[in-house]
Amino acid sequence: MFDVDANGISIPVLGYGTYKVKGADGSRVVEEALEVGYRHLDTAQIYENEADVGAAIAASGVPRDDLFVTTKVWPTNTHPDRMLASVEESLAKLRLDRVDLLLIHWPKFETTLEETIEQLVAAREKGYTRAIGISNFNREQTDRAAAVSGGTLAVNQVEYHPFLDQSALKETLARHKMALVAYSPLAQGRVIDEPTVSSMADLKKRDPAQVALRWLIQQPGVIAIPKASNPERMRANFDIFSFELSDEEMHAINRIGAPTGRLVSPADLAPDWTA
Ligand SMILES: NC(=O)c1ccc[n+]([C@@H]2O[C@H](COP(=O)([O-])OP(=O)(O)OC[C@H]3O[C@@H](n4cnc5c(N)ncnc54)[C@H](OP(=O)(O)O)[C@@H]3O)[C@@H](O)[C@H]2O)c1
Image (tube, rainbow, N blue to C red):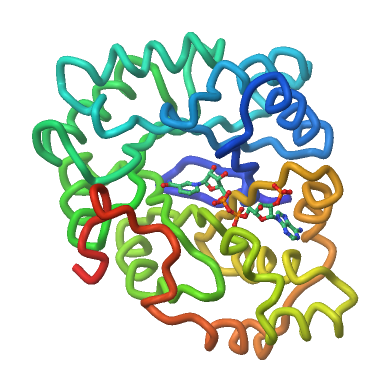
């Protein structure tokens, strides 16, 4: 495992995504992820599992300083009157004094992008989080948000997997020294049937999911947060540090993706992805 530097913040390159990991079963699954070795956990207010993740962290015995915990503010909590209180609620549920990374979940605001990012900066100044970032922002919104933050945003968390070309956004993020956190890195499981990835996996005696994750984390400034509730898959997804993809293999997977290969684009939340 290695860390990615994102505007001075070190982030473990592989995290565990907790969407739909909920309740007592969810806590058990998160504890299992911590036993496997994951040290970076991704949750959100809307997942309604912050308390379950908090319970797992408390039960795991993993020292707080060894963990990197991200949560995300839901659009309806972005109003300046509400944002900080909603983050306090998240912290109480997570049983933490502060998170490591606090994100705005979607570029949909109760007031404006500028006021929302100012509140995010205020959350950091209050010590509620070590670092701040955005999620699902397009390039133009990323530029605006980075400017309001005084160039201190650490990441933009967006969909990224072999079916989706994110090279334009990656250039924008590199310009701001921000990392790209790849969500749905396995294309929600679809990547295992992709012919280039699966034949490469056969040749390398690896799983297709391992090849897809390796392809992501081998790119500068890219972090991946796969979700697996099955313990064997959780373990397999963590076992990606003992092999490499050649330049040719990297290029072969690069050629699969198209800007239109997106799976997640809710009409009421998504920005114009081309801007
Ligand atoms: N910021 C955002 O708006 C946003 C949006 C979506 C997701 N996210 C974050 O990103 C995380 C991951 O994304 P995701 O859950 O959408 O999709 P994903 O990680 O791409 O795929 C998860 C699916 O793949 C399966 N899987 C996992 N490992 C596998 C393997 N080795 N071989 C075969 N299948 C495998 C899982 O099965 P099992 O679970 O049955 O093991 C699950 O059905 C989320 O949990 C969440 O934290 C953020």
